[in-house]
Length: 112
Image (cartoon, rainbow, N blue to C red):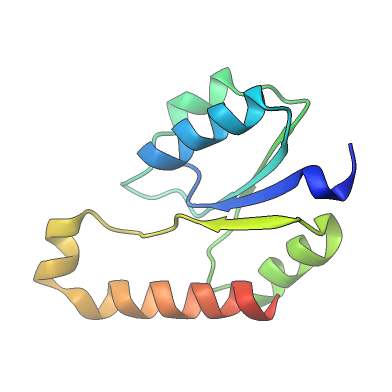
């Protein structure tokens, strides 16, 4: 496959991400999932993913060097940022850490 078929999904280990990756695999995209794996993750769904076109990177989006290395190495055509690190009620109770994670992680993706 060509680079145009490479999609990077952040937060691909959550409920929405695992279902999106399943759809992308059926469409024959090469998918790289970046996820730090937290309480929001659904890692048991990984066992159903084809290893031919699915690659997992356990990385926190705040790790600028690792994010840049992945983006440079795989040169994805699209980046789908689903990383949220939160269930809504937790982010309402204490919004600052979630805001910092989301903004810093997104900035690292844009600069990658």
